[in-house]
Amino acid sequence: MSLDAQSLINPNPIIHERKARTQKEAAAAVAEDGRELIDASEIFDHIRDITDPEHPYSLEQLNVVEEELISVDDRGSHVKVMFTPTVEHCSMATLIGLCIRTKLLRSLPPRFKMDILLSPGSHSTEAAVNKQLNDKERVAAALENAALLDMVNRCLAGAPASG
Image (cartoon, rainbow, N blue to C red; front, side):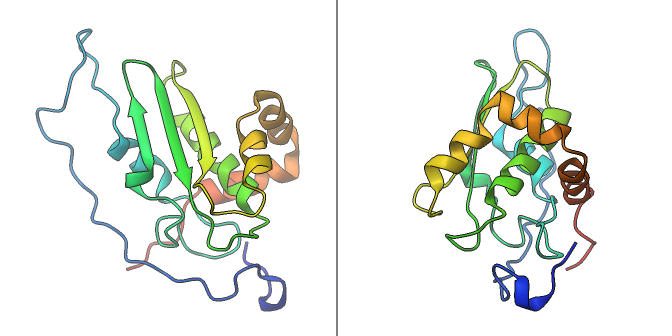
């Protein structure tokens, strides 16, 4: 999946320590209908190990995703994930967002509406990328492209275990 050093968008990314996984409390919040409520911590656990398309590190290790940038309204069935590319001209931003959306589509109940957004000011074409990532037709068309779907699936397979 890695590209050669001359074609890397960010040849020297800063690698961050992974957070310890938190165990859900035994008495997790429960909705009136008896189901366990989904929170930002659970969403983060779903997306933290997605591999960056350019580097053999997870989105968490590159600080592209952070639990603090995730909001969940379980009752309103809404999830918002903001992510921050490692460089403001990252051409992989749309692919990273597509990976996040695909992982959550595969992991969450279908009742959830998702907004996948770049962190404000983090990318030179923020508005255009956000529009693409939240347009159902564009996302569906992208996932019909076999080569793109293969790349998404490789990213979703997760980063190799380390540190």
